Image 1: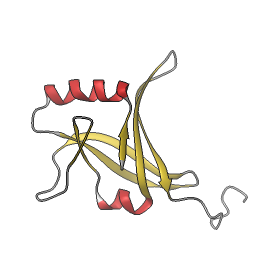
Image 2: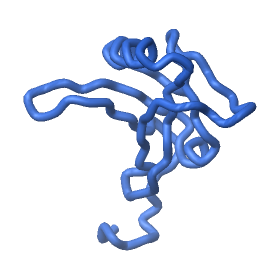
Image 3: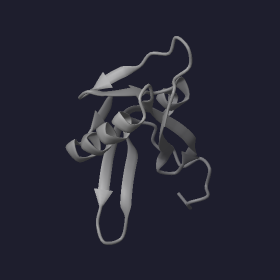
Image 4: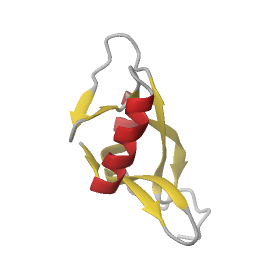
Length: 104
């Protein structure tokens, strides 16, 4: 399940108006101690892919994301230090401490 904050929805809606035919795609970049590293892009989903509509925004979440994360939150952050989208996993994977790189 994907959640989109109101701020993110407003910004994404503007992007989608300027890029007709595109959808929001959540991508998987790798796995770390905090869980999956996710990315956001505009693109075209593969032929026949399931595209969900969340609060009026079309979103594609590929299977490799769903393996590690069953709930994603898309937010838009703007402050003195940064401005941009944040995509986080709200559930699914948790670190078991097996890799040892963090000392756990």
